[in-house]
Image 1 (cartoon, helix red, strand yellow):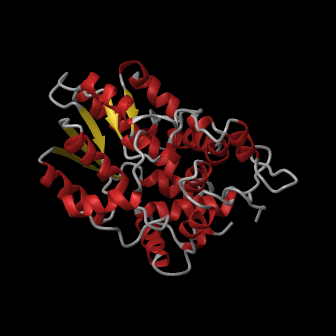
Image 2: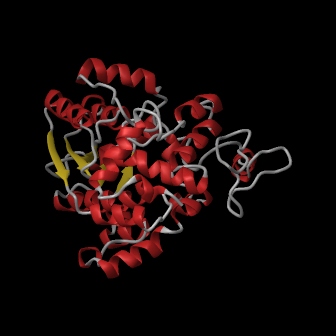
Length: 336
């Protein structure tokens, strides 16, 4: 395994990520040179309030809230409805690997908040996920899946004339500095485009599937008609605090099996994260947590503890086996 940065949790992966003589990666060095600020990371709640005011009352729904049932997206929904008094339409995307616990969290939230909810479940990408495993494409399945769910989210937003889309993304997921064009994501996503080219030719149903997030945004012209934001970018809220809030107010409960520790991600994510670790030594969660470390919102030790993943131990072992079985794959398909 490549050497890991002594400041964040990214491993060396030349030419995009490399360590200096002190064992610090170029991402951390560049961040320190810009005083440790992510582009847009010094946002204020007053700015959020101004943005929300522009969209309030313009249509039946003031915004579309993406809610997976995790603490971050559920608290975002809570803030939008209770704190800022907007009327949201809640959208939950299920790639057929979501846990019942996560869906129950969303159901409890929308019932207690009295808001409308669209729940979408589909096996549309089952063949694509399976082919990625069998063809030994060692990229994380999450960025691939995100092309699908963001495309669907934009479609729903257009259908209901709600150009403001609200997510539960943390400051570590703030991608104002280039998004998937950042060096870390270049490493994780560089094989996705050629893989989709193969899928487009092999499966007719994927002939129009987007290869990049830029392609998705261009198709739906979201950059011209609206925006995507997260309340967590503007607030100094601590995860432990808003987790207790939604437990009390919305009946939220933690998920039993998820990666990283303490998160609410689908079961497929356990497999996708393993594939990413196997090839690159890190996942997109390492990128997120490294940003949080640079922002002083997470310690390196805390991040390392959350990011441990061993698919040969429970609860990950049975979860990965269940996912592989559902895809028509087996453990030997994971061998290099």
